[in-house]
Length: 400
Image (tube, rainbow, N blue to C red; front, side, top):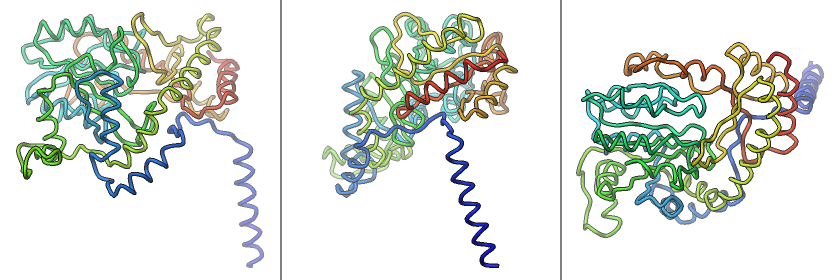
């Protein structure tokens, strides 16, 4: 009996080895690792400071400020929490309305819905998948308090138009730049154009700390309130700077400070941002050039980067003819060992979107374009061999 069990275990082991060797799966995403992350995390442990606002958090804040030119940057536990802080600082209240695209991640709406506001969705542009700036003004009412442009795939929204609308109607602008770190609009870093900017350093982003984000703002008058919100409603930040003898509960707040261990991981990548950016841009450009024949043949559409925008190669997507073709394509790529994925299901079609939001105007492109879009593998460690295989699989697909 023991011999039979051993043989079965051996056969199982051999099958697993054969399976692993036989099928090389290309992931959609693998978090970046440049080499210094472990060293810096070890240093954080040696500092005996692994909670928030340690050496590495401060260095990350300064890096963001220096790189973007923003007045202030505060690392947070997520981009979701950065957006929640922005909603609080913008004084969003129950009954207010906030204009945003429906084609976005749930956190964009969640932050404002938590304050009791209604998400007012408007249609997107089919070229960039960003909010259609020409539809915003018609959605404004006497209850509107803010506009939330989402910079999809690291390509900027038309910010001159959006900022002009906001100024004329006295509205706050909260940039959802989760995908926009190190991307630019007419020379300005995304996240620094509106009143508030929100970054993500989730493991799917160009630079990561696993879970994390940052809040950026241009008016330093927000600083004291932001620090109190971030430090559980206390003036603890002032205490640590030696500005007061003791700290106390000042106002409402929460704990939005990431661990310095996470910040240590992030700093290693921010310091190597040029290397990461070069690699991601090389992948983007390779896909774009190699897949051009499919676009010229009318089988796919490729990403568009408008004049004045500098993207960050956050993702590379293609658009199939329709949902049916995309579904077949995703299945085909998976069978060939390549993980390709769709993206957001429009918020206005979801149960919560229908409960907490309203779509203003016609859904001409949001649903239609979202059903066509498929994202290709894009990560720092993606090999040239795997890039070529992804393209080969797409070129061999017969059901366009």
